[in-house]
Length: 258
Ligand SMILES: Nc1ncnc2c1ncn2[C@@H]1O[C@H](COP(=O)(O)OP(=O)(O)OP(=O)(O)O)[C@@H](O)[C@H]1O
Ligand SMILES: [Mg+2]
Image (cartoon, rainbow, N blue to C red; front, side, top):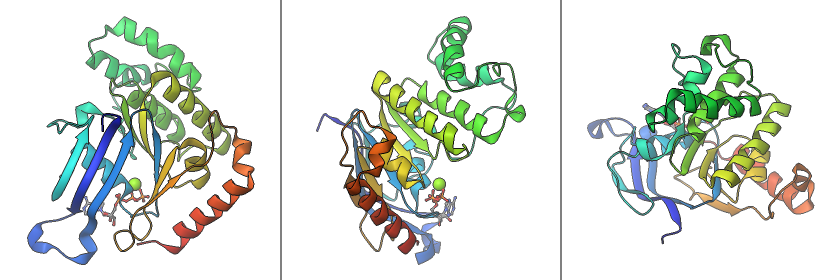
């Protein structure tokens, strides 16, 4: 399938050494998931259900015990370099200013500093960080750091973006404007996005499909196609079929922690 950006096939994974294997360390058995080119897919599931672990497997920070991970249909040695990854914990470099942090992927791609800053400056302003370019991460709030970290991931050359709860530290209003900004970037930059969130509304508003990791591996991962056309309005979430889907998902999340 050449329209697939990312595939996980038959993945087995557990944390810890094989000689110490026990049920509690078990994470995935025969996990399958995929992301089409240009698609926006969310992963939702209770805390501890393995969402961030999926990203660590994709980036190669953890190694699966069995199975295959393909990017654009190919197995590659250095997957961390092939995807734009925003980890759950903020990994900004404390010794670099905000603009230096955000511009890092452009510099790695060989762009001159002056050009990189020229490109990043208006983007920082768009995400509400105009005027903070020369601050250091320690001088920003959690939500502001999240936005820088998000921009940095979005600026990597890769068309596959892995975003691990990128907006969890934001207040409701900033979160909505970041979601809208993300959709705009997604369309404009033609990225394929895998997005982790705890927020059912966020997943429904943003995604083409949603993977639900509830009670996995006892229950199979559920896959839901969001029945909304694009462009979307937040008010679309109030349609009866969307309210019913939201109730169903919340019920699954509440009923199915590991
Ligand atoms: N380095 C590790 N060593 C051993 N177990 C780990 C390690 N990292 C995570 N785990 C365990 O693996 C399980 C899944 O963790 P993971 O971080 O993937 O969950 P999550 O779904 O992202 O949770 P949250 O929503 O809280 O971020 C948890 O039970 C966790 O305790
Ligand atoms: Mg996590």
